[in-house]
Length: 262
Image (cartoon, rainbow, N blue to C red; front, side):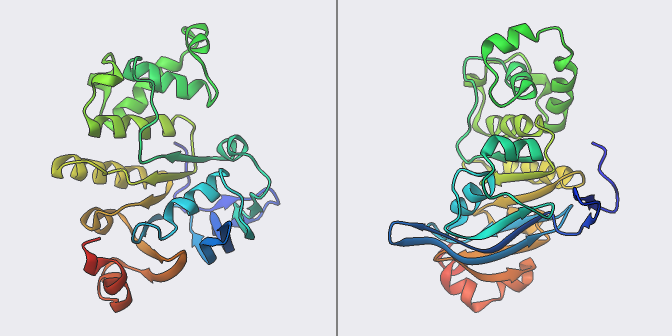
């Protein structure tokens, strides 16, 4: 996809960005409840980062802040060195930020191929746009993306008939259609069996050669196989950060999360 081997990205000021995404002192309050508080996080270009923690730790809030669904109560979020504050979700998507949610968001009545073609047309595309753009070359790119996620043989199947794992892979393909630099994956293996989980890990590692990926996940074997660095959240704050072995042996993490079968 044309990414450089050095993972250096150029900011608008002409300087090399060594940090793709920076969360700087971010807090998010809902009424009297702080879902996140004082969070600092740096994601390097080309990194696969896992974010783990118990339910209610603030993981989904973090993703919603990055994509612009929420605005931080305090702090700043910078992407390629520029603040994202005030930018809408669609503006952030155009900058190269894409997300695959835990619950799939697809057009059940359409084919696998047409779902990807709609994503290629744009985030606000309608069925009318799909038929209007029928001959504009989107099909070749859609087929290429289906090859990436392993669904080319399913291209004419209606999405509503797909098994759970294939629906998850389809939505990853739809996210890739936006040509992201940063891909956020919210529990991509949720509801999967061992074989689907293994194939999803292979897919994510392959995508990591082209993209920067941040993944929320509870399956620790999956996390171990894909992530270079693991960030652990608990009660809306950063609890620990490091490699899998570091996190696995951190008593605070074991007590708060891993010891509870997280």
